[in-house]
Image 1 (cartoon, rainbow, N blue to C red):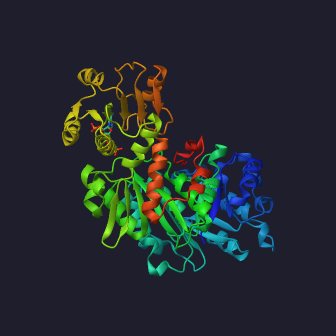
Image 2: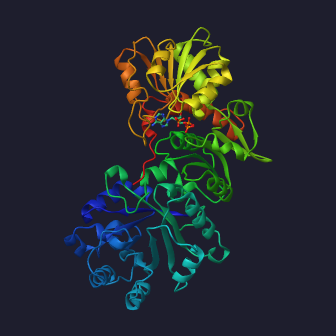
Image 3: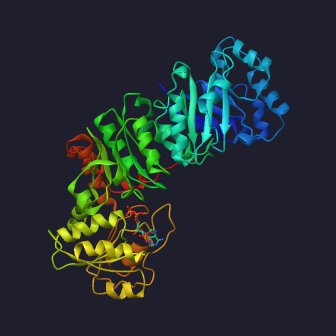
Length: 515
Ligand code: ATR
């Protein structure tokens, strides 16, 4: 099983030991990043394995490889040697592993390490994401039978991750311990699904302690162990996830993994930030992903890949839920009911008859909102940055349309019982802005913003200050996630589970936190 390695990047040995103590139960082995230590502290690394009381990797990462060591190679060799010197016959007192780069060529040091049971991790840190032939790279790095080959590649695209995943499946490396990981935001799931990437370990860090991450994209150690139940993820574990870009905030991982943990279900739900929906479909096949939540900006782009779809998806042209059927992917839309259930409960009504509603935005989410307002008997005005998109959507339901300008604002004044903000403006990961900067609320409008991260967007803040009743998208997102659960598993989410997780403040869990 893949192990969790806690990357220790504090400036002092004492602080590293404190962090290790605090997160010991989530840690299988630790990596002492000597390059992060203050120069004086580097002199006392030899006793670290004994003080740590678990297997430790000795690493002195050079700046050219993304580390902090700027001294010359001679100084680094000396430091490595001091960490491995005076080896103890009891291997628990020695470093269990030493990480040396592929171009490191000091055979005597390697030999000394090996003699006393210190295993070599031979590493390559590719910060440009430009290794064309990853299997060839692994092959070229192998020198002995017992070393662990490590390829850490910075990924800029989903295609890069796919190449790493495919390399991990090569038969010739099947029985070898290796570390394969994708650095950066677009590779975050390679750190959660290490077992699926056939990686010996996953590096994590103590993000909640404000320590510097050992490499871009590392996940907090507690989050990895508890939320993503890393140690329970085997090759057989069913994979689900959420697809979006930039995907900086989503409640999906928190919601589904909490449910899976409570149910003891052999499943994991990962964030899949992606640059290309086409590559993501290939990756989902490689990983045998069973179900996906789809978010900005892919709700319309996935339509062409659906083998079958629900009537909502066909009528509104947006899909937020994918799951497997015999013919391929089945597309559903849980935004519709999630939205209307949430709004109707908030205004304590059964329908929207006699309600005049303004919808801001005309993307995938707005399509679901417009369809529901129409179904519930409301009349609407759609305002969007791209007026043509507002027009096309409005014409489907005999609604009015306009732009986010003075004419739009004038029209809005007659359609202001309820205002629904569906655009991505104000969302975490985007500019903190107000899509209708020049509109002044009267205080009588009911205002809903589908965004839930941040809790209160600038738009909602303005509405609240004017005395409006406001609702963010958290209740809606939980409702639509419950419906997604039903799509994924063919049964309703057990109510007693829901009451255990749907608590106030739960939405503080919505950020995809990576270093
Ligand atoms: P979703 O699936 O969440 O609806 P989407 O389909 O990408 O995402 O739609 C995003 C919506 O936010 C669109 O209405 C978009 O306006 P355009 O149709 O003009 O692109 C709107 N949007 C995004 N950025 C915006 C910005 N900076 N100002 C105003 N509207 C914006």
